[in-house]
Amino acid sequence: MNDLWNQLVFGNPFRSYIIVAGTILFVIILKRFISRLIARFLFRMIRRMGSGLDKSAFLDLVVGPIGTFLVVFVSMSSIEKLHFPPQLDFDIYEVKSRTIIQAIAVMIIVISFIWLLMRLVDFIALVLRNKSRGSHGPRDMQMVVFLRDFLKAILGIIGLLMILDAAFKVDVSKILASLGLAGAAVALAAKESIENLIASFVIFFDKPFTAGDVLKVNNISGTVEKIGLRSTRIRTDQKTYVTVPNKQMVDSIVDNLTLRTQRKGELRLEVGLSTPSAQLDKLIEGIKEILRKDTVEKSTAFLSDITATAFLINVDYFTSPITQDEFNAVRQAVNLDVLRLMESEKIDIAGASTDIKILSERS
Image (cartoon, rainbow, N blue to C red; front, top):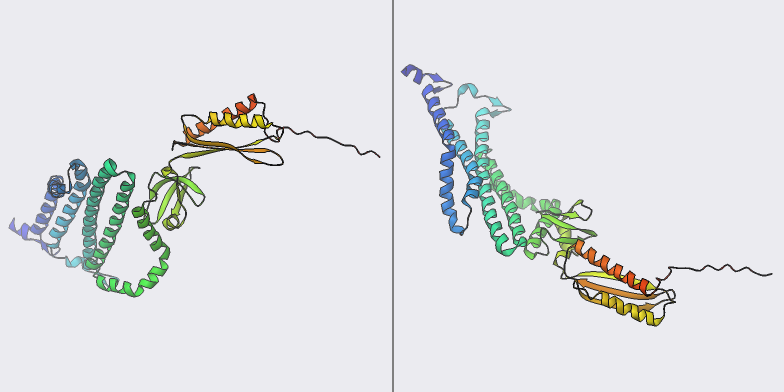
């Protein structure tokens, strides 16, 4: 039996393989239990951030990544105790197979660790979003989403640098130093991307609009669905999906229709010249009476001009910031009431009737 345990297989005693396999199997079996214990310990540490933290949400986010990182780390650490089999030591394009396997192992460890950190960022963002939803509103919620995506991008860059340093033995300090020399060229090549990134910070800190607002910018009207690091996505009135660079959103005149305090309705009447002044005065007073509705907060109606073809009556009225459907209903009601008033007063719109006379020339 001792001979079997000590028998060499690929340069290692058979006993070593059993120990490594048993360790990995032990961790895999208890992965769920151990990861939940670690997650509970981490939750106790971060609970100091504030009250009302959702423990179940935290466990759902981090238990999986913790278990994966634990299995990967223990497996790699256990396998590292074995001697690399000489039978597998060969070159691939002048690179040792052992170097390639080590690089892959390091990449897996770094990726699993960065994944765990990203899940922690997701949980912190979830906590901040819940607080924003309860007190500060959608603008701060969108800021939290932006910071979450930004931190994830930073973690991705850090993970890439860690892989280059640990797996491929690249001197990261030299890369960072060389960026200073090539910074001007990179900045020039990525000028628009950098401008859009800076503009995204301007949007989130200045807060001219947020997700869910109805905007009008560059002849585009629609609802903001997402504000990203590079662009803003807008769902237009025609239900199309438009992507506008953040730089244009900052440099252009943006009309935030959601923040308006009133909605304006207009009516321009051209009354026939045959209408007596007394009827005109009665029509204007009748329109003013129509506009004394509960839905109308402010209104004006007056004879604005007299032209060669018609009397021009301007009607402007304002409602509260109601929905588009409600505003359309108010406009329709006002227009129909004015039309009925004109019919009752027998007032014609200019150009409604035209008399054509044919004159014959006498010789």
